[in-house]
Amino acid sequence: MSAQPPQPLKRQRQLDLYRRARMTMPGGTNSNFRAWGDDTIYVDRGQGGRVWDIDGNEYIDLRMGYGPVILGHGDARVDDYVNERMRRGVSFSLTSEDEVEAMELLKQLTGWVGKARMTVSGTEATMHAMRVARAYTGRNKIVKFEGQYHGVHDYALVSVTPNDMADLGDEDNPVGLAWGRGIPEAVTRTIIPARYNEMAVLRRIFERDGADIAAIIVEPVLGNAQGIMPRAGFHEEMRALTREFGALLIFDEVKTGFRFARGGAAEYFGVTPDLATFAKAMGNGYPAAAFGGTDEVMSVLPDKVSHGGTYAGNRVAAAASVATLRILRDTDALASIHQVGRAVQAGLAEVINERGLPFVFTGHPVMFGIMFTDKMPTEYRDWANSDHDLYDAVAVGMHARGAMPEPDSREPWFLCEAHAREDIVDRVVTIFADSLDAALEQRTAAGVPVPTKHLGLGKEIG
Ligand SMILES: Cc1ncc(COP(=O)(O)O)c(C=O)c1O
Picture 1 (cartoon, rainbow, N blue to C red):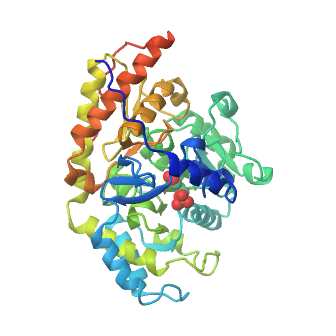
Picture 2 (spheres, rainbow, N blue to C red):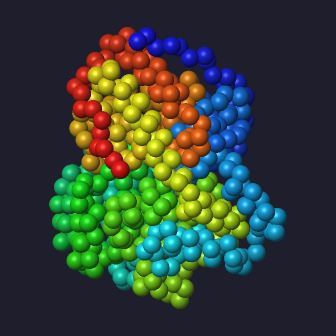
Picture 3 (tube, rainbow, N blue to C red):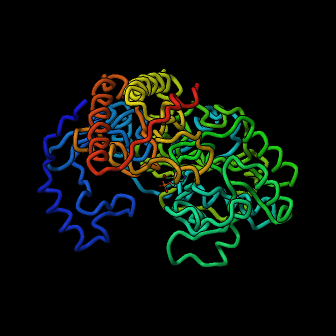
């Protein structure tokens, strides 16, 4: 099982562009999450489930832009529709029929949303959902779970992604940790951090602060920690607890919406929130997003709550949403993605089992993580106990061999419909196996012990 060394990637044009970009953009990119130093990737194009950087290296894309590209890059069904609409003009700050149809499709697919409004990003969607919850209840505080990511507005950047779990405070009494400077303490104080899957902590929080709590906002799975799943009954218990204390339940479906099921995680888990946010898969990568809720809760709009935006419901996003949501409604795209995800997982499981390593799959086959651990993870703090250094080494090795999962072990792999057509399974599994062997050899050479306890395939999902 000696690992095949990969051909070195061509990097010169990217290194040159990185040096140039750093002169004008912090870190050489438009997002902290893409700034990977000398390894920063500058993309040329994507097609289907593949992506090419500007040096011409080709990768099977397992990031899919952090999830939005549900059908595949350059999907002609969506792009042709968007192009046709775009040529009629893109910015009017008036409302188009596509916007109406996009929100009708959202209502139809979720089955529970009564009213919805479009935004441009998931960040804006969660910000408005929190505001609506505060307006509707007349309360200020929002409960949010450690390790969950709801975008980059001030209210979302609390207890998101520290490497050192000690920063999150006592397990029974988590503390709110602002991510980076510039977030007013007064804002942080309105966010109460809780631990995913820990009902006892949640109940204590409500018993202490329930009269001030407007809502719980929750990614139905811990998308920022490889998609850790809820314990059986967790969502139902949250639903009951929020009702008991007169608070709202907000599902942040930015990652799970139109991906876990047509009706997102709410359909998949069978629990209906009061409000939800959508983005990513809604527009196959175009910047489309929305927040929506029951008629009753959304009735605070338009008179009592501010929401607007020059680009809210913009032509491109609305057209992309119409085309994408129609496809997700009318075809078996999600079932195909599910199937290819399961096939990839089965191949990976065989590889890892052959090497006797402890691991679990987190998440759902359409969006899953691989944790090298012998404990079933239930919350963000468990990520720290997994062998994420091994995962990181494997991810780096996969890049070098032509497949691109996110190099950060907290981010799940994302699959798209095009992957199902492109027969990627064997290639991904071989690349993974070679990368794992290389990472293990490096460890052995460095005298680092390799874990051997075997847990096997994680929670069998859907
Ligand atoms: C669950 C969740 N909510 C909100 C966001 C923010 O969305 P955006 O990046 O479009 O602002 C993200 C982005 O990854 C997300 O995963």
